[in-house]
Image (tube, rainbow, N blue to C red):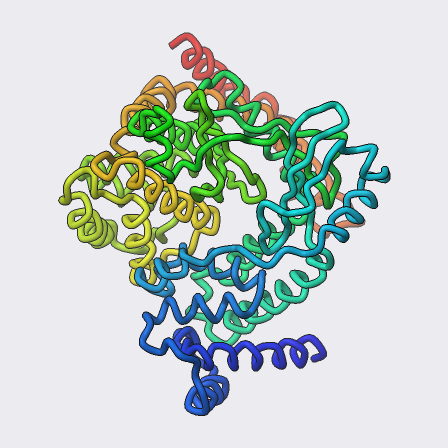
Length: 516
């Protein structure tokens, strides 16, 4: 009750801000809240800010900006949910900038000394009090270490953990309420979406995790010359402080400066496409906040990413699904696109695969019928999410971050060269990867691995069966007829002999798969 009372009060404050910006329309998407919608409309008639003629998405973005850091980040997350808000509103929310006024350098210095337990003068030969960037969770200062290394020092905002904890509790309460009062919306997994958002934010607020993400990404690309991650200074890194090698370069969206410096923008686009492919398909670990301000090009035309607070992961099965789906769309094979959705379990088995194939064609044909350089895979995914309600397709939270990343990557690609399509550049890599991982030989190797896993689990399974038989035959346990108990014991004694054909068959299949 206390939680509901507290969050209801906060929700009323949110409605007031939405009303001032004439951005109450999200409430219309949630049936069952008539009192709240009435109150919002009343506030909306009382007074609204200027800018009522703006598009709805821009009005909503302005309201979220006023609400503070966690709402800005929530808006950026909702920018991937065109299935909920529509493409136009989602596109407007993608313009939200995570920028806030900086906090004082005195507090930044105090945080560094408290976290690293050393005076600032011992840690850095020089420290610039003017932050070079200030966002909702942290801000960045340039410095030089006592050893003469130029570094960038990220420091968390004071009190940010408590502020986000309050807002995350509010978001979870709203999602829980929506699921309870509107069961038909459970397929959208609002609580799971909030949980994914919360996990992302909490990871951002432990800068040791960001340091680990940077180190992992660096290891993944140790043998790739066109992409280099800044090195972590672990001695000057803690939960609320992160120190990285300082990057000197040109923002990847500053095309004029790139060309003036002699960089080949088409080659940079090819590198970007290849790096994106390697992160998503090869590694299943990708930079999920790759807006132009987080990617630079150094003097040697090497891509230099920064800010590793938001990273995405995809398991192998999800990567297989993505590769099958993308190639199906690119080849116009809508039957295959539909099949992989059913095989992955994303569309329930009781739905019509023919009807879903028709829906996929309706999505893909208008997009893929355009000139190659105008094809947007991110827009294709957004359209796909919009048909989810018709086919009872559940939201896949692990794909939301990827769709957002694709949207940003496409925008960068169009900036570098609007006549080239990054997905066509990456297509040979995807096809090679598919042959290596989804071709006949790969499927046999995977079958052998699956059989090996079954063989490993079989003794444990037999042990569980024996223990179950013991419990059933135990006179102090479940009462069985003596003949039934004797039959169970006899089957258990004969089990090892009876199973020898299965063991032999599995062994022969495994050997054949390996020899193949």
